[in-house]
Image 1 (cartoon, rainbow, N blue to C red):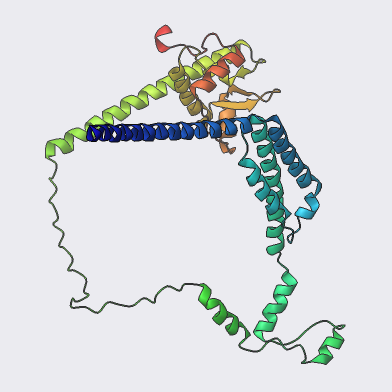
Image 2: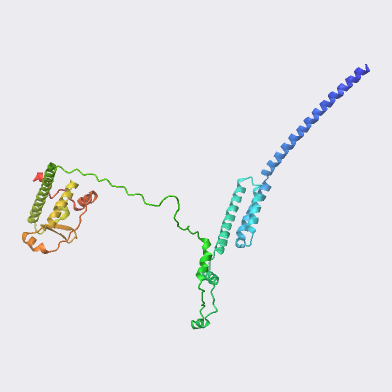
Length: 349
């Protein structure tokens, strides 16, 4: 009975111990969860703390005001105040949580950037300042100028700074500047196993041309002569026809000048206008018509009488080139208000 009781007590003790351990682990886990919840709540309270937000914005404004007020001092090369301001801004940016604070940080960055740019430009301009006089003095000293010789000449020149350069002065400058330039390698011939001889010229094979047959010799010139003769006859006939129209218009009213553009332009055909200009040019070339400018400086045309042709044969004529395009043709039609041609087609005679 005692052993059974003792066994029951031991079993109860084991159960109570395991239950206690489970309860302790549960309490410990509850405590850890409580600590995490507490840390997140504290961080959220800091983000929403109006006092802390106000303090951060105030520090940003103080930094902006200090940069604007101490602008002249910060522009000095030996002043490192701008670096300190940027480091302080980096520390404040770690606590930025709201848009207003971010806007102040951006404003500070813009002000600091403008200041840094101006400071860098000053350093750059000071570092690249070039004094031509000082450079010339250094160059003359490097070349070995001796200002102590010939002092009498300096007194005669009113005390002007003179001196003499040694004979190798420019050679000294050339040797110094030689390292700054890359010279091209000298040209040399290749000495190899081949003979540098030009290749033998190829013989040209002359092809024999086919001699034209007797019929071709006899027929082709006849055809060309017929074509040339027909074109020449057509041109002469057209020139005589245009001269007849010019004389008839002139005889109707000798006191009224005939406008050149109104005479040659066909408002319905650009190609006919070009042909009229072409054929009229033969009248002027052969002395059968003359051109002149009226009071408005516009070209006019008139026939030349037979007596005037003989008398004016020895007078030197002036020639010019007349150009016309479809655009110019339309502009002339509108300008002179041309509605009908003065040289009708041969079929309408």
